[in-house]
Image 1: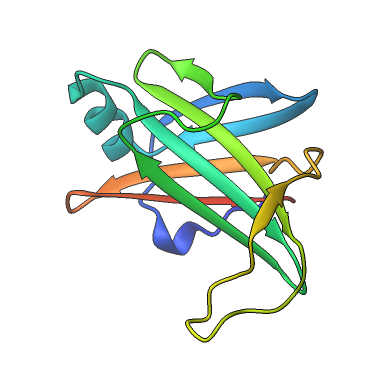
Image 2 (image 1 turned 45 degrees about the vertical axis):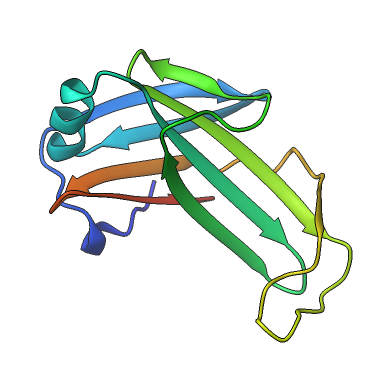
Length: 129
């Protein structure tokens, strides 16, 4: 697997392989992320959003509460969900935000997710190769 290592500080972290909707995803946490997860009292929820419209857009966000009905517990301190949406059309409004999206195309699952914690901030990236 190829990862964009320029935004992550990885040494000996942790890795899990999970199954989402019949597809395998590798999850890697940096040593800093592992340490920050261990210090938490509640789980960290990672939301991966894949938006397919005129162009593909991906985002990884971190929240304190679960979203969606397909949240997967990776460990007792880490849970993820993958949300794939396809806007009704490729138009954006004056603010540049996408049109109303409806959940669809559930077969688009990233092959990998990387999580780092640096300078008090969670960082994440995912990819399909």
